[in-house]
Image 1 (cartoon, helix red, strand yellow):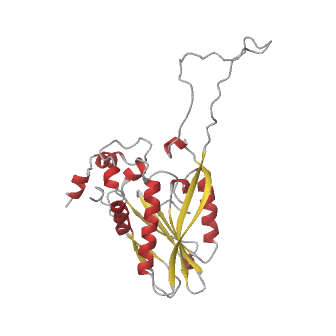
Image 2 (cartoon, helix red, strand yellow):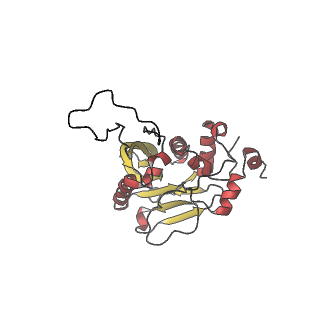
Image 3 (cartoon, one colour):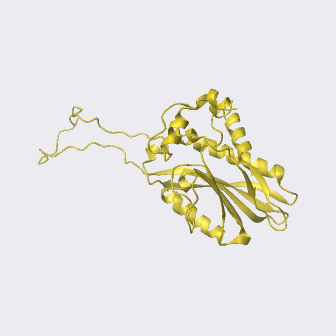
Length: 267
């Protein structure tokens, strides 16, 4: 059964399912590109592992365990007598330090021209760590380095939360964005935007002139990821979306009213 949403499903982000979905989506996008790329090109997935911090508490990003003492709980006396002269001192409670960093695996797609394996295009499907905290700083440094090279860059932002990619002018209205920055059009980029009500688009992925763009069907890759990942079994539709999710009030009401059955009956 497909997602009840016509396009992007905000419950993947809201219910913590995005990391696994994100990795599988990149795999399916890579497969689709290799299927449709002309002779002389190949798409490959690359990755790096990094420790990143977030602007907001990690508990809102990944599961954490916090050990502490319940407020108002009775104090357990020390099993060893206090040292001479230490009477009246407050006894410590030993608890783990709370770390605001987490190890993340960042993946993206690189398109090479054969046989020299020259890098032609980078396709980034953004993750939360690309849009917040130290991970955003690292991503923007990588982005700047790519922009300074004769390499095409395609940025796909399917997340409502986090800070958008920087541009010289405000982005058009929308919930989701794609920026296609062609090496031959620097410093300009083509911005595509759509809302949570819209279907996922087909994206032009530029190659090296005079070769034409290859088209990436996001809707196809999304549907394959959702179906093969068994997300219908684990998603809890109809639940309230978290207040921290930046979605318009009317869209929130609409989204919370969707179920797999109502979505499949959209007609």
